Image (cartoon, rainbow, N blue to C red; front, side, top):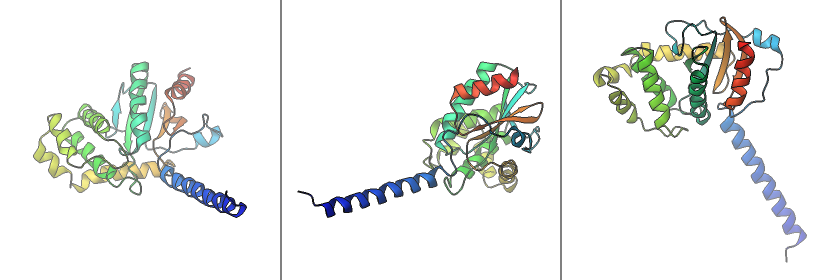
Amino acid sequence: METKQNNNQKQIAGAIIIAGLLISGAILLKGSTAVAPVGNGNKAEVKDIKIKDISKNDHLLGNPDAKVVVVEYSDTECPFCKIFHNTMHQIVTKYDGKVAWIYRHYPIAQLHPKAFHESVAMECAFSQGDNETFWKYTDELYARTTSNNRLDVTELPKIAESIGLNLDSFNDCLTNEKTKGNVEEDMDSGNKAGVNGTPKSFILKNGKVVDTIDGAEPIENVIQKIDKVLK
């Protein structure tokens, strides 16, 4: 028979374990966001968001003249980014010319030390071709990683080879400071826009932020937001 004292000790131990799980969960989710509440709160705050202007150096998928553009800041080793990557492909297909997607790098070193190097590899793919080459490489990288810093670094040149890139040039590029600077520029622009977790996306209409997608929101939420903007 358990005594009252034993029961109390077990309750205290259980409380400590639960508290520890909650704290560890908070740490893990600090930089990677699963799903945020639908809606934007104060619309004036959305209007005040300053995001870097879209340029020819951005990685765009879809119609460059699309009425609506979703600018996403992403971390290749973030499991929620992997989910949202598929969501955005569905969105671009669904809206066929009305919505374009821009990918910007936001690797979070504290959570995923490999992600920055993977972002550089994506830029190296771009340097050998164009946006089509960038997206081929990026899509394959997201397909191969199981997230949370588990992609073997040896996969990066294998992906490059699989899409027909020159491996010598690719490997040289991985240590190029200018290429690293391109990734850092995206990260800096994300910081200025208030990004503090991934994925974080901004819905633009005529170059202005009109809404946000906070985390890997379900596709139904994203559709609802885009439909509202397209009206």
